[in-house]
Image 1 (cartoon, rainbow, N blue to C red):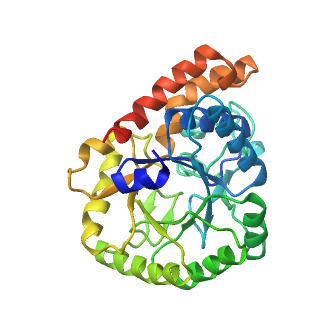
Image 2: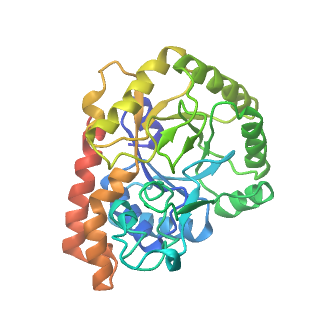
Length: 341
C-alpha cells in the first residue's frame, strides 16, 4: 500500500532511526530490514552520510521486492531532547565506578571504558541522571538556520518533520520559512509535538505541561502557517519521547494524548509516537481516528542483539541470511498488526 493510502486507512507505520543517530552501519541495516517489512516512511537525521546509508538500506529492500518508503528528515525549531548528544570526560570517572551509564544506555553508545561513542548516541538522556557524580552533560545537535535550505536541497527528502514545543510559534515559522526556501516539493510536512514545554534529562522531570486543548490551539496556529505555504500536515503526537523500549506501560501516554486531542485537532492525519511499542495497537479504540504509528526505540531494541552479532562478525546484518531472516521476522511482528488493521 502507498504511504498516502496507509495514512488514509489507519495503517501507516514509520521507522524512526533517531534525529541525532549517526551509526551508519546500524542505520543501513535497520532501514533495509524495516523497509522489507513494509514500513511506509523512514525518519532519519538531516545528515548526508545518514541519508545515504538509509537510501542504501532501502535500495537493498527494493531489490528484494519491497515498495520504497518515503524518506523523511527531522529538524527542530529549538532545544529538543531528540537533537542532542551525551558527553563526559572518562578521565574524571573513578577507577572503581560500576558505570551505571553503560547499563542504562539503549544505544550501546557507552562501553566498558572511554566516553560516549558519539555516532551511536541519539539523545535519549537516560545516562544523565544515572551518573552518581553528575559528570555527564548534553550537547545540542541541530542544523543552523543558514544550513537548512541548502541541506534539504542537497538531500531531496520526500518529507520533513519539524519538532516543536508549545510556545515556540515564531521559531516554528522561521524554520518553516527555511524549509520553504529549499524549494523541495514535500509529500508531507510532519509536526512533532507533545504536552511539555520542555524537559530536563538530568533530573528526569518534566517541564511545564499544557492541556490537550491548549496543544490543539498550538497545532491550529501551525496549521495556518502550513496552509499558507501549501504544505500538507501530518501531526505526530509525542506522548512520552524516546521511551518505547522501556516497557509496555509507556504506550498509554501516546494513546491518551491522541484520545484527548482528537476532538480539537486541526485537519490532517494524527499519528502516535513517543513510548510506542507492541502494546500500542491494543490500547486503541476502533474509533480512535489514529492514522498510524511511529516506532523508534522499540524498533531498534528489537534488532539490537542481531545487530551486535553482525558487528562482531564484521559483516552487515543484511548480508547474513540467517540473521537477516531472524531480524525480518521480528520487524514484521512489530509492523504487521498495523498493516492488517
